[in-house]
Length: 219
Image (tube, rainbow, N blue to C red; front, top):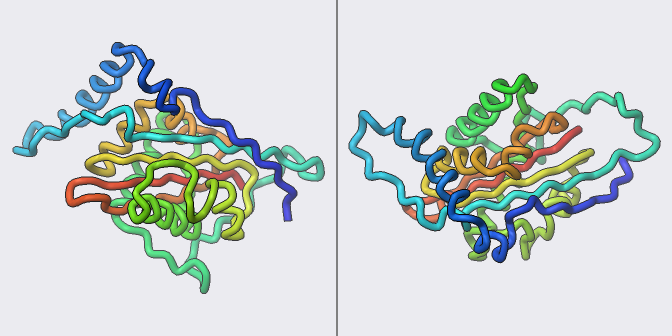
């Protein structure tokens, strides 16, 4: 068992005070990014344009860094993921979660990074986190049920060297992906060359909205 010391580092721009103080030009930049990437997908449809209000309060990201122990060489290869269902990992990944995995790996390919492997057990806990946020009416990295993301993953028996979490609340998985990529902190998790595996959990928060949790680990 690896010896781990978790260091929690909140990505800048996440606190309420910081969000309120963010310049209007930055908000406009985010809005333009989403419009340019989303609305071009809707030119041949009659879909109602998405409402971008609440834009700043619908994203959270955290990087949880766990240093390697002194007994672990820096050249250590990641262990194999538990990719196949087992007695504990009987999770079935939804099609929209697979789509989000593809979007993430497309972004990584653009900058020459290896694709993230989908881990079924990590995905199960990502969906449990999204469901917990819906059931208990909160939107935060700390869960009243599971604690911090690091505590949740360690208590699930999942070993890792580094851990990161993105969460998003929006109208669709694709809108969530665009918002995460438009935010420096979230994009750093998605494009972190150290991460090797990902878990994605998406639940319907309302008839017209979703909650997304992305869990990233290095093995």
